[in-house]
Length: 256
Image (tube, rainbow, N blue to C red; front, side, top):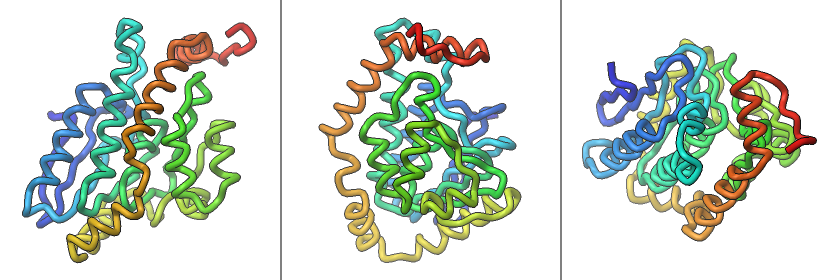
């Protein structure tokens, strides 16, 4: 079975993540996802896009750290670069894009959800941008996006400085998701939202989306983000944080 399934529901293209147990994001998966997003953008019959998961409990738990750690040091930025390429493809996707968070969207999983225009979240799901817990940074570009989306600056600080995860109720109150429903209804609700958005005037929608996302796809900003991630990833704190994650122990920052 394909790790990234694709189907059409009328004029809505649905891409389903199917990489149990946590829908971790490998470089190959991200490259395929980017290609599918860009292809949907070129197809005239596609009026909207939905990203969803068939894995219980997770939309995505983020980048595949085992794959990342298996790469030689000079190549370890490739996974983050692939994630950002998908994120930017979603931002530049001129049609409506809806994320169905029937499970938790953590780290890179939440990055993908942030790039969508509408987010539907299950009542038991969680979201986080907690790279600090493994000695990494979400980079200025992604912190800026989180701040742009949220109605609560305090929540943003708690997410990125303390690694706080938000439940559905708190995510909705902070303006980070648009709808909350029971897990079993999330995918259908996201499809309904995509159908509604697909009825918008397409050129007007594309222009309004570009206005809402103004600055978020600036090339210089992403060059800075990639450099910062690479610099931090090469440091002692990231090595300790990722080693602790792999060993399932608490990180010891005082020695990093």
